[in-house]
Length: 247
Image 1 (cartoon, one colour):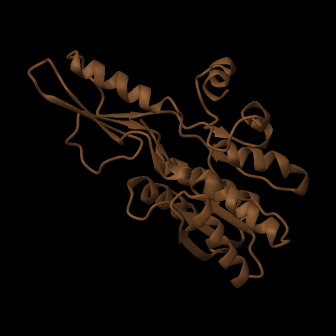
Image 2 (cartoon, rainbow, N blue to C red):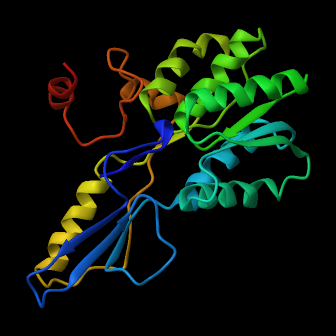
């Protein structure tokens, strides 16, 4: 029950509806992609604005507060896209020497991001950094730089295995990133909240799940070179449970 941002795939809707036995009401739990209303039972998810802030601040710090950057967004009009971008822009606004050369909505998708970055590489001879709000988009940007024979630059991302594998494979080429994580247990937390509401227990309107980060120093603890790109690396499953799912 979570949106796979980097592959634009929805395994279940972002709003879970459950008919209750307590008065026959319908419990509505919004998770992952927030709805812009408080007329729900509960909202469960990470702080998407903080996600954008974290990647942007890391990029600014890595660039020393100056440089030409590209911005890769998700799906235009979606709540997650707007919140992540607004967080990033709130950081960039404080650094006048950070120049945004161009932006593209690449739908959290590898192919769209690869095409967009190829266009940016053709248009701009000097790109110093990439702020991306999705792991597959960052992976695509990295691959576009390699294909163009351009030196790798810092690029923010998200914790999916495709990016993490590419990151590890290119550490010796100077690549660096930061990968905030949308925990895979977010849907389970939403389900637990729904069950509690159905049982008549009080639930918080807003439940913010802690936003963890993967950086170069802890990359080896999360990357799985034996698993596909689509694996999401921040999970409460044991390695044995993950192996059973994928093998």
